[in-house]
Image (cartoon, rainbow, N blue to C red):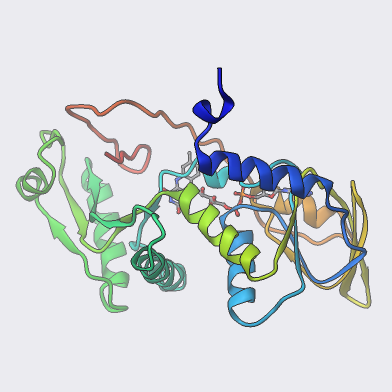
Length: 272
Ligand SMILES: Cc1cc2nc3c(=O)[nH]c(=O)nc-3n(C[C@H](O)[C@H](O)[C@H](O)COP(=O)(O)OP(=O)(O)OC[C@H]3O[C@@H](n4cnc5c(N)ncnc54)[C@H](O)[C@@H]3O)c2cc1C
């Protein structure tokens, strides 16, 4: 069978990039070294490039985007404390801008409903609303009947109420990650796959270089974007850096389109 028929043009270009990346030698120094290649690492690289930084190297122990970024359900939820919400608000604006420029990120403002099936949970949601409203979040309490109107598939017989957040969005996490990566790469950022960082060297409280499976690289700035591995990476610094991140199990199921759905508060969420 013809390979071109099996692989789309885009996939062939990606393969080409990956193979050329694996034959490029790791430089012995860079101004900024970023560890990871998920959405956070690519966002850091993209923003550095946007602000005129050129000498940026990203190191990924596996293949690009192989961490948790490719598994996200892509919900951009704003029902959060103000600091977190500011970042999410900024991200939504950025992704909408990139989408308007022609990048297909599947950003859509669909809104979301946080459900309460117990009175206690409803009180907890009201409390969250109380500190979210004064800081400018557009959200409102909704009754079971209003929930049914917003989302006819939800069985509201055991629902006490909920919070409707109309400005919540969804997007395609893999497209977001790869778009930020290609824009960073266009701006000069260099990516290295199969490059595991095994030691972070410091002097006078500053990182001056990292030891990797492809050799040593000196740097002025080091950015730990290793996601759920960040804590481990912190332990690889000398002296050790304590990073308060601990991975938790997250089960998920992907299905064909379903006719109906039900959700449990806090434990389960659904994205159609
Ligand atoms: C099932 C699921 C659903 C989710 N849904 C949502 C959602 O709807 N909305 C939302 O906002 N978030 C969601 N998340 C969370 C979100 O996906 C993550 O918070 C986000 O992707 C983390 O990105 P990251 O760049 O920090 O980490 P990652 O994408 O995990 O990237 C870290 C990278 O660092 C690399 N690395 C680690 N250690 C080293 C080392 N020593 N040397 C070299 N490389 C190293 C790893 O290989 C990895 O590729 C979901 C997560 C899961 C699992």
